[in-house]
Length: 467
Ligand SMILES: *[C@@H]1O[C@H](CO)[C@@H](O)[C@H](O)[C@H]1NC(C)=O
Ligand SMILES: *[C@@H]1O[C@H](CO)[C@@H](O)[C@H](O)[C@H]1NC(C)=O
Ligand SMILES: *[C@@H]1O[C@H](CO)[C@@H](O)[C@H](O)[C@H]1NC(C)=O
Ligand SMILES: *[C@@H]1O[C@H](CO)[C@@H](O)[C@H](O)[C@H]1NC(C)=O
Ligand SMILES: *[C@@H]1O[C@H](CO)[C@@H](O)[C@H](O)[C@H]1NC(C)=O
Ligand SMILES: *[C@@H]1O[C@H](CO)[C@@H](O)[C@H](O)[C@H]1NC(C)=O
Image (tube, rainbow, N blue to C red):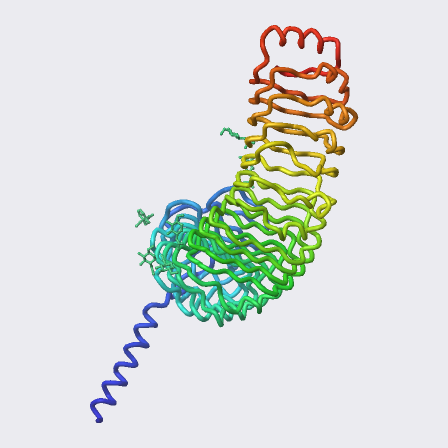
């Protein structure tokens, strides 16, 4: 028993000695410059708070032996001295392409407000030391291109001044400690980018009521649910390759929402976004269900590249919509009530779809710009009823004639483009469409004799078609 106790005491003192040995002895440096000079490279020195465009530099304040180095920026492939951890007045530390590991001594840097580490060549361990939580002044943390790091320590909960956190290009990163991140209530920016092993959003997101900007890119998440974030203004969710469902709700200040290139996204539910003006949901070819509820301020919606075969009905509830872009889908029709349901819609882009037959009926009486290139339309009959039309694009369809009713638009229409169609004729009265500043009918079937005649005819007119 006694022997055991003795052994245990020896063991404890061994641990103690071991830890002591691991700590850097900062007393060997007379001052900050002395510590910096230990580095095997030159760091340009700047006095005061001047901005620098040199890549490797220090910024110091005061002169004489007690100068304090407040900023250290290293941007070359070097192996910095761990004496950096003795610069106790450091406020900003940026390490780009260095081999500096993070030691427990980082706790010395109590004034550090910004820490940026990019490209560590594997020098940082799988886990950060718990002492990382002692950086109580830290407001900006960026970790990017870090080879081995797998998580953040629970102790990050003490970083209560953190406002911006970016984790980027960390291939093995798989865990954000839930409880701890929920304590970072001053966070206004959170970027989770290129973290292919990260499968879950923190469950405590709701605590982050000052969060304004959130980006989730290239993660391994299958489901993302964002609900009740009172300050969020911008939300970006891109290139999450196995992401299947997204639910976004109750974000009173959200202005823009971008959900791009999530290839396996099948289900999307967006509700109660009173301030949102712009929504982009593009390149999600598996999208089957899409639902918009109560988005009263929306002006612009982009749903390009989603292989939609059916026009999502809930778009018709977006009464304030001005611009709707649905290029590169599989649409063969649009709802008959589009014009009455969306009276503010001015721009409609349906290029690269499967529209057939004649142009839309009933007419879109409020639309100013209509883009219908790359469809299979065969007729423009009824075009004269689209009375607000200023710009019409119909390249690459199969239209064989321009009906005379186009003259009904002669005071509004400014541009019409019909390259790659089957036209063999152009109404001669179009010479009188004096508002028309752009008129292109290249690559059609106009015989050369007819073309000669048209050239002569339009030569007399302010309208100058491109044949
Ligand atoms: C930044 O670079 C420019 C030109 O390379 C130089 O004239 C200027 O002095 C530099 N400024 C600082 C603070 O180093
Ligand atoms: C940093 O580590 C990388 C990878 O181990 C190595 O290639 C590089 O030479 C090291 N740089 C220095 C300055 O030691
Ligand atoms: C991260 O994912 C890769 C496969 O994509 C796997 O080989 C690796 O073991 C994972 N790392 C961790 C820490 O889970
Ligand atoms: C991604 O998540 C799936 C489960 O949703 C899991 O099977 C897979 O191992 C994860 N991949 C990585 C790289 O973590
Ligand atoms: C995601 O999509 C790719 C290709 O579209 C497919 O091979 C893969 O199985 C899908 N993964 C999941 C989890 O649905
Ligand atoms: C139409 O298709 C052509 C050829 O595939 C492509 O080059 C062009 O960008 C497409 N135009 C539009 C507006 O999508």
